[in-house]
Length: 343
Ligand code: SAH
Image (cartoon, rainbow, N blue to C red):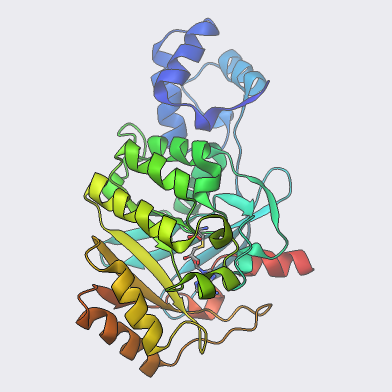
């Protein structure tokens, strides 16, 4: 079977080279071509003999993201890519510039099974998981195109990372490898809609990344209406897992809360949320919901956002209202792919 060579760890690659009858040091050399220099083809590995490159091309493949559409925000320089994959599917990634450097938000699946009603990624359902090599290719292709070094990784694009657990863990191992891109674990955020058993599994791994949890509601009544996953793992189970995660890892959980006018933005919602989160090592990120053309939601007013935030903070819950980047290019994930599918 032809394997994704970019998904192999240095150890696996070295073992493979020896098995194929090549010297051991070739493993390290190829790893560096793949993850440090980020080549797109075997032919770019110029110090690898031609017959070996041919052998590699027989045994492995190098999945690549090709730029189909690139949008650059005139407001803040945020860059959004619609990449096409080798099988003709599309995924989106977004590069944002912050004071501390560049951050990329990548997709982990083509489409999504979770079906959250406010989310553009759910439109059209689930197609398939991305391989570790494909996810790395989102990062490497963007870096190459912009000629930059990315130092923050956010798994918050299309897809549910904990529903593609093994490939995502592989990606994290590879992107933090000091012989590759060497992104610090502290600079990785993983966002989940709340796959409870996987939160426990992740806690046991003690990785030191930041876990974001898409909460979006203070109770089951509201949450179940927009997030089908809540029917499987309700808010009590989810928050219990979050408390466990925070105490096991000593890392604070970042709760995402998209504020939707008249749905989850009342004073009562804020008070209920505060009482649920009391005493947990956490932080709430309030996000004015993005208008998605296919969805009928409106964002809460600025006054409502402020009031909601004030209630949480006065109850001792650290809260920020998220700054919006790339608003002129539909930078939130799922939107470009959805419009592409329509055509
Ligand atoms: N499946 C993961 C990661 C992908 S979604 C998760 O659910 O966390 C990334 C974030 O964007 C999630 O917090 C999601 O709830 C949020 N999101 C989706 N649609 C949105 C919208 N229209 N407005 C604001 N945030 C949205």
